[in-house]
Length: 355
Ligand SMILES: C[S@@+](CC[C@H](N)C(=O)[O-])C[C@H]1O[C@@H](n2cnc3c(N)ncnc32)[C@H](O)[C@@H]1O
Image (cartoon, rainbow, N blue to C red; front, side):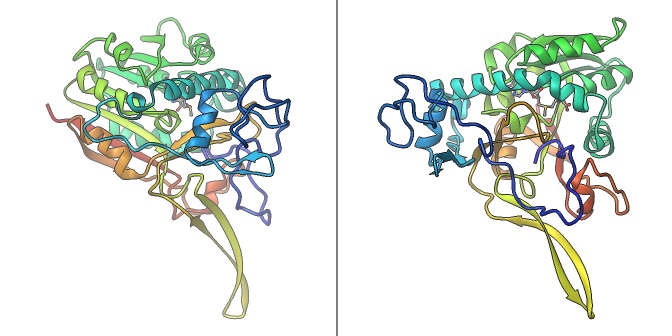
């Protein structure tokens, strides 16, 4: 799941099994006086404890607790179509906690993550970036907003193409890395900013941007409705928003890759595919975007209808879409998806503002 799992699995190793929350990690003792999620009562130094209201929210939304461990999946509230701030408005304090926790985790992972894939991995170089560039079609002199820019790899690419870039991320450490990596002559303004905060986003300036981009960031956001609402104001009429996400149909906490040996025409053959156990219910889980990262991050699975309707409600329409997959014959031990050339691990969408 995530950024291609930069540590590939050897042939013959089981392909199933998404990392689950806290699996194999040492369990933390509950802080004194904290609620015990297994009983709803007070924890007394039990090996499993809760850290925040966000964790309590997990439980209230149906996180299973098995053998003292949390399972990864929780259901997310489906936003009311009339409610512009969506889930954030419904459960403001827990969503704020979840968001703060997501930010802390990204900060904790930032330097490790940048050391690992800051110069690009197969998923970025072969699939995500070419598709995003094609759909964006940057013209020199355009002003572009990069949302969830990480260490700024794609922001720099857009600047090379002649764009004036404003790049935001809620992780201070990622922004620090992005500044370190960016030559002073490049036209990029980096800002620490939370993309779930509509008011903050609006301070960037109405009708300022020709285009906006979010590469592999929306599925990391607890809520996307405030961002979609803000983009309606920030983009010029006809402005485009290009985003990539891990493909919600084929890569989520409800899917796993499998390999099976079958006999065909008397010969033993390996068939590979993806098993889908669920899709329609929006859920969140914690998992590793890159195997071995310091802390598992939050992932927010949204079925296509929920993801795209968030844009349609704000006046966007889709006028471009790519589902890139690795070409047959590409063997890359760092990208497990090369074994599935007919299944796209990412979805890249261009939305255009109809105003
Ligand atoms: C998977 S990384 C992608 C980074 C970069 N766009 C790239 O393609 O390399 C997701 C990024 O989104 C950022 N992010 C997640 N939620 C965010 C939020 N609410 N506001 C701003 N940035 C956020 C994270 O800090 C992280 O840098």
